Amino acid sequence: MSADHYFAVPLLVRDVEPAVRDAIRAKVSAYLNSEAARRDIAPSPEESVATSYYHPDASILEDAGLDELEALVLRSAQSFLEQTLKLPPRRIEVERAWINVFEPGAQEAQHSHDGSLLSCSYYVEAPENCGCIVFPDPIGARRSYRQFTKTAGPDLLTRQDIAVAPEPGRLVMFESWFPHAVQCNKSDKPRVSIAINLREAQGPAAAVPGRAAEKVRGADIPGAHVAAPGTVQDPATSEARAAAPGNRDASSAAREPARSAGTPAPSAGKPFLFNELFEVRKNIGLDLNAVQDTIPTVVIDNLLQHPERVREVIGSTPATNWKHEQGGRNFVDYYDCRLRFPIRHPNSLVSLAQQAIAKVYGINTRPADASVDVNWFMQINARRADFAVPHSDISEPARRSFTCILYLNAPEECSGGTAFFRFKPSNSLTFDEGYARAVKEDSRVAETGLDYWPEASREHWKLAGTIDMVPGRLLIFPSEYFHSAHHPVDSFYAFPRLTLAFWMVN
Ligand SMILES: [Fe+2]
Ligand SMILES: [Fe+2]
Image (cartoon, rainbow, N blue to C red; front, top):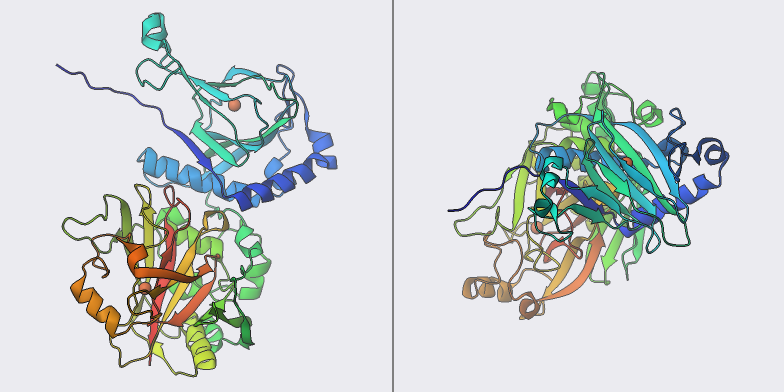
């Protein structure tokens, strides 16, 4: 005889990328020395913590300029509600946000954030022994018999609480009713956290979190040199705008705050005009970058006029499987999915790629397809390599083809990018006879769709160089070069890796 377990309470613990963590820390540190902090942070009347909670008009997110934290929290909440709790999509907004400073010796008794939907703590400063956030088993009635809640261990049925140690850059999110306490800060330095209550969005506004994407500029490629920098004008942009009534003027859109109304909320699943959503900035500079002086790639940074909106809309569009073979690993180890969007001409994205290819490679091209694809990838189990199966995008060797990849993730979601390879058996960077033969002879070489991660990759592939994923960066390279998605860190569990891909052929 066996009994089933019922009732479970989710808790989200997520560590942000070091660059985001450091940026937030620098801003909070500047805030703590500001006039706003002196005005708003005061000792709690009941607790030993100093907090801005009792100044309801003060907004720590605004006063410290924590756009990236707000965006991160809203996205985490979205995934917590939709993926963990399996609730239908809805718009979420910040109800209230405040800072907590626990000087040495400070602590906080058990409480809950009743009335809100989700709550979270983000740790800015967390010296050793500064005290955990502790959630007692919320099924209080079970405590009537001591043996039911007797351990602090991991046993689901008998543990009496769960303590999460704060780390700088760690986000802990929970349902607001979930009672918790903060242990005594036994270190000799302050413990600093940002607390945020979230609620369902009120009113019709489209909450587009964060303005952070625009602040991220192109990362350098090691060993890259810049040959022939130039400016690519985009005639298609103005035509597209004139042809689409209701399109907003780019310059006025740029001046508007990111939280303006007028765009359908992404989770509402409303239609969008591709050319409007993927509006390309004007007067974009382009660089020819050579990866290790051998692979001629073009990188165009800061391409999109509305990177956050693109991330929100594309990231909340339901994706379907791409390759899904019998006995394959898709939907077991990871989700490898695709969205396909038809493109209509003029399309500023395609026009820009066309001009860049003509200028840099001297080849006139047109789109290979009447659509563009978004590669939508998310991990289920840990990655098994630093990159996906290397391959070339050549299908017809007689035609020149160029692969165009646009990174769509938000700044705090970015890691890795695109990797380029040398095929060891033929010592070639590009599709050749040796590779064509090996694909036929050795099932581990080909990209079969059975597995996203390569088998025996060291035997076949030598990493030749990488291009970093940067929001709004368009990468163009000749399709014959061996390449794949680069995954140097274990990420993309809570949100998808989003890259838009299209091919230009002559
Ligand atoms: Fe709390
Ligand atoms: Fe590819």
